[in-house]
Length: 95
Image (cartoon, rainbow, N blue to C red; front, side, top):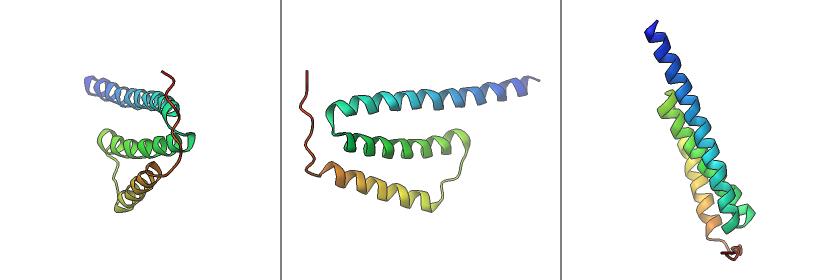
């Protein structure tokens, strides 16, 4: 019975961490909208969410990450890098 309780606790902890990281991701996205264009903020948030979800799934839920996932992650990172170097005007700081 103790083993079952511990496994249930671990499962709730894992899902709690997923919820915590999603809330954190939304906070970072809202803050990035203040400094970047909406396109740059959205694409950067998507890429970060994709990468962190894959890594969290690997460590928290023992999901496999096939080579196609790494290829896709590589292309996403390259795309975000190209977008960040583009000539899209950054929003002026309102501090």
